[in-house]
Image (cartoon, rainbow, N blue to C red; front, side, top):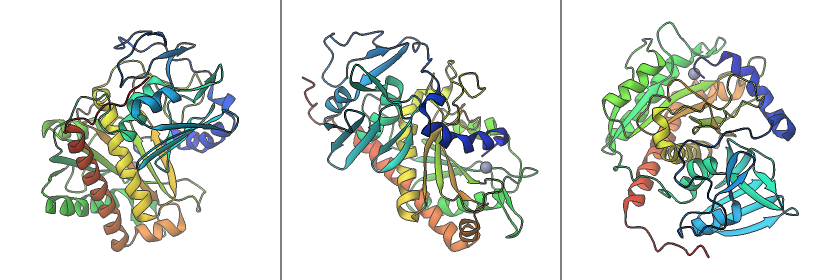
Length: 370
Ligand SMILES: [Zn+2]
């Protein structure tokens, strides 16, 4: 993680917070600025493809049954109304009352707000629905179409006087490993016809916002920042994590105290314009890292990362494995595994490009919402 030392400890408590929903605090998010349908009551006639917005406290929500209908998916409730499953051809999602953790196409997703249970109705925050969930279950749903991806920017984390994570016994450091994986992924993507730009080609220090600026300069269609993880005094935890910048008003996954510095930010950041596409890119990368590498799934998460904030293109940060895990670090230290990692990243980017192109084709007949 870049510049996240104080968060490393918080991260260890995030799992605890999920087990004790009360720790997550009340959903104290003010209404989003200028929503396209401000405070629309559930009874208002809504277009077939947009679910009605329900206000719970100060947060706009979408009932999961309405969300399913809007997306053309089947809805089933279970566990005495505390669990909702949305299912369609090739896609599925499972949500639990009062939990920030959901399952999307078999992958762990951390929501910005816990799933609400009010009046017997399970609801997702509108921001989570529109910007994290719907874009994956039905790519392009409610989003501005994107051009077919051609320019991919790969960001090798750290560099120069910032080595990133280090495994002293294996004599490897993060900055060298990330550059190696970025170079390998570049070769694979170039063979597919993508134009690939690396934010650094050598062992040099580049400030985080400059990395995003470089992507903006070449008008990137996708930005992937490559990192390796570490947990001090923990040689067993392994697996992959995928991060996107939290949609406006949503908290970081590691934030569970209402007063914490990492709480929701309410000002607009450039990358917010492409939240939904970032979610889709994160999901396709996540699926390949977990599926192709058989790596433990530590989830798709939200974090206010300086390297993503200024982006004008969809952007994701991937934590490709733990240098503190004895077994995983030994694998990461081999060129063969780094080639597999690069292949998984390239495949995830290809999957994303295909989904973007599919979303540009004329839409299927919209499912009826009533
Ligand atoms: Zn890092």
